Amino acid sequence: MNFTRQFWALLHMSLTAIPQRLGLVLTIVVGVACAVGVLVSMLAMGVGARREAMGNLRPDRIILMSTGAPGPMQSSIGKDIVPLLYDLPGIRRNANGSPMAAAQAMLYTQARKKLTGDRVGFALFGATAGLADTLPELRLTSGRMFEPGFHELIASNKCARQFMNFGVGDQRVMRGSEWTVVGSFDLGSSEGMCAVFADAETILSAFRINTYNQVTVLLQSPKAFTQLTEALKANPTLRIEARREAEVIEESMKRFNGILNFVSYFIGAIMAVAATFGAANSLYAIVDSRRRELATLCALGFTPGPLIAAIVAESTLLALSGAIIGVGLAWFFFNGFAASPLGFSIRLAVTAPIAGLGIAWAFAMGIVGGVLPAVKAARLPLTTALRAA
Image 1 (cartoon, helix red, strand yellow):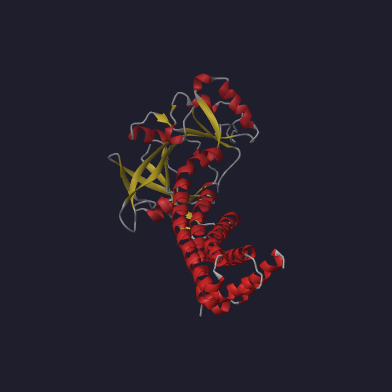
Image 2 (cartoon, rainbow, N blue to C red):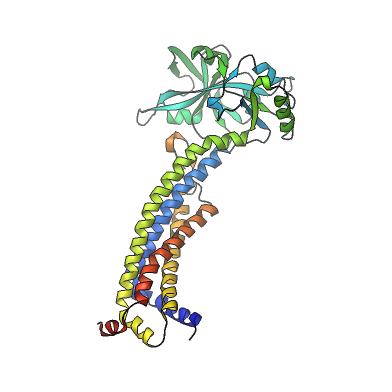
């Protein structure tokens, strides 16, 4: 009898006998399902966070920052430079002939959570008059836009839900002055983090800042990016570089996704090790319960190779069954589920790639968990096995 026929015969016997050892089989399936379900659910946070951040992405929106700055927070653009940037070629103009560009000063200050009273940071942006042009997805849901020269704020609806004193008409104290929330807004399809806008000059004065962090511009078309970058290179004294919005967002998400991925894989690895040990213990018990059967098969001419392969295949099939259950449960319970890790609102997204990763994770668990019990079965002494009760 060749290898293939022996393998299929042994695997068929193992699978048809599952009802007789259902408890041990369920230990393997449930353990793997839990490990895969947790891993997929946690990785879904990272996918959801990226989708959230990219929700309002525009190919014609460009971020201008100081040369070499890793991100907007590390960028510094002098006030005298901003008018020169507004005159760069390729920038779109509105109906009034003004460049669709806005300089922004970015900083973080604190607010208290509604539920716990804990102090948490939120993003405060001081923006110039072109804000509405560069963020066409900003839609006021109540109140009005802030006016230049006044201590006025507009806050995203995320702020109003998450923090105290962010409703229209509320007063906030910042830098010893009272600021009035005069409007609430949504940012297109993205909820994200709490964001607050105010007049740029008022923010710079209140917080004693004399530079902006970035200038956001809308191009005449995405192809105008080359024209813009060449103009910046032609004037190196500006010390400004242009980056596509997608590039800036990807860079800003690296740390956040890094934390989520580390936690996901760390917890997933712990549960995977536990599930693998559980699978191995269950398979050892199955091998022990089949000692006479396996010894008889060896005596009839079955060789160790097909026996090892059949037991590893059984372990893998059980692990894959658990993986499918785990992925299914993760999708049913968590796909689209709203979460707020690190204060960033996201909706978990269980996608095909992370489902495939979970299944591959289970495949590895099945192989590792099945190898040692399979080797033990192949090395089972015939005389000892045949004398076993």
